[in-house]
Length: 436
Image 1 (cartoon, rainbow, N blue to C red):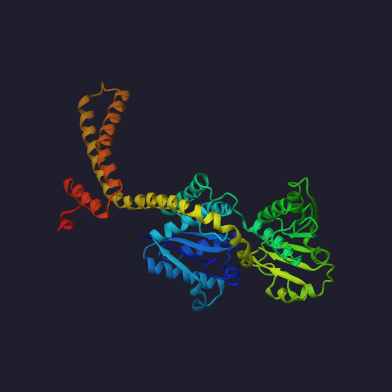
Image 2: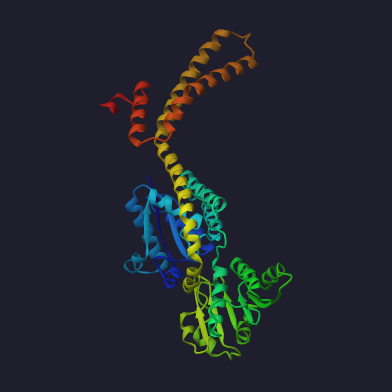
């Protein structure tokens, strides 16, 4: 068996490619079911975020397994394999394990050290378990990757001052508004007429950062207005006007800064739409949705500056130098966690021999116990029988403890295989014809 990962991220593909491979929550179950239908895929889990789509699998043959996952991605995205493949990466075994742990720790994020990715890895693990697409191997890997992410955040300063996609979007707005006024740096958003479209997790973070950057009033639009009202209630000291999404055009017309972050699977703001809106201010759109909420052609509007997640690189680069130094320390912790997992993985080679040895000794125990009990006669009480049975089980466990511990302990594959062969031979665990 082999652990593999196939995917793409902000490092390998532009947003116009990533949005075609974004798998929304409501499609995860069906996608996992489709992937499990491939005969070579034994376990599988999907990580889908605004900046990456990665599919982790336990496969029989690494080459066939990777090809099956790539075939699925091409069919799902409706992108020809020849066009899609240059944007995909794939890692196997040790590299796949290391990659997931780096992702969980925030070491592979657009924003180095971001905290949101850890909760997304937790979600990937939960969805895999709920859909019964993961088993003991991926569950162990995912669980240890989450632990690695927590360890990095608790034992290093990587997350100190780290920004999320949402805060980077707010900082980009500050930067661009400042440039319009000839300021080389960040400016307060107090005078901006701010519109936020969407009331999900990203919007919550957006509002938090908008408030910290001087915004004291904004309009919040959502298809479900009750959800918008509930979100607004979490910011009692910020004036938030909640409206339905069908009032989008009239609110765009009076805004100067618009953030969009919805689960829409296709753009709902395009050039044709905004050309029919009378704008009262020069307008900036910042779209952090993937798939995008704002069509690329909006950038052609004379009075609108439109940005998407790929434009956040300008802001991110301003904040990376400090965390790059800490990242080296964090990566050493991740390497330690990788070794722990790979040692556990290697120890699985000993499991069949250990199980056979335990089974054979258990059979002997039961046979000898039965002989002894039959000699004791009817005067031997049920309580005494239980005591003797517990005694014999304890003896077997004591005998097995040292060899089992040594067979599972960290060692080279050659050393483990040599030990396994000795145990198999001494206890006659394999047929004579297998020895020949």
